[in-house]
Length: 407
Image (cartoon, rainbow, N blue to C red; front, side, top):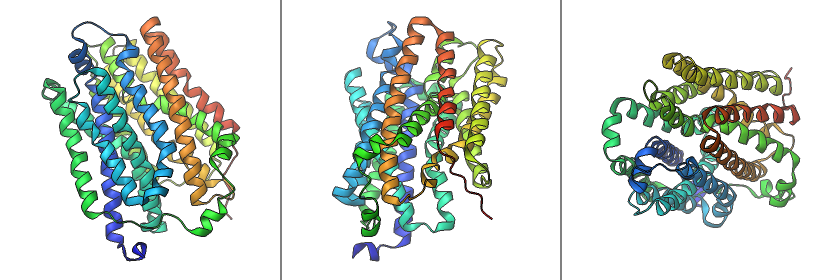
């Protein structure tokens, strides 16, 4: 069988190809958000548009991620890992198509297709880790997957810190350069990727009783997903919506690229420290403590900008927020894996449903935030943004405690 002949070297190359593809997706998403004013101006002219319109790209990308997570497993089963990921990277290449669309709505449609591919790529990294990475190295590769969005955001933020004026001269050329990386990775995948078995008959039989419909009815899935959506409001909006909002409100002294760099840099630092810090303690109180600190530092960062006009202090708080978010991210995402009777097939199905529900709820919350900002102003929207993550804390209290003390 082909799954027996594929080398570990090839498998690891496939992993890093997909990892770089997802980093490219993150860079394209954050880059598009950073260039939002230039993009909107090119399609609508100098006239202002409602924030719900300018945020439309973010809504549609998250809707696409909902669809992608429900579809990814089915596509994998039907086509195998090689063709499934080939389709995903091909869809990601629509980032290049999007920037040359003649109107805003076609641009949004193409970006949705890009997001569909990017989200599927995230799913397809996991079976490669299971197949080709040794047990002692799995946490490292899993942490790379978790940090991949932050890495992409950090790279694009650094680029805007040093070459902001140049990158804003022509947003189409800037985003085309990012999208070109996806095209190169698509070619690498075509030349080097091979198929392998993504599951065993025993694992499939063990998970047979856990179907899509049962996952949708599982109270744990909903409680976890609701908490996760509230967590993502704090995290994802800190990299795409909030920096642009603060730059618009306080243009004289605030730079959005610095905030994105601080959040993503703190996230990378938090991931690296997490690799060296096993959590040998109950999960729920630990996550609640870290969650409170993350919300508090973000509130302090926004207040430093909006009330005190101290951007340097704000950036330091934002770095701390990024660190705290990612220091707890892997712990929260590992809770489903710690449930009793968990197996790879059930975990894949459960996470597909969780990510789908999560991004659906995230999109709704993101829409409400932009509506509040457009109709009620900065402070009501800031309070809403800081209040939503409290739901994350509340949902943690409803989850089972999965920590088991080892003797």
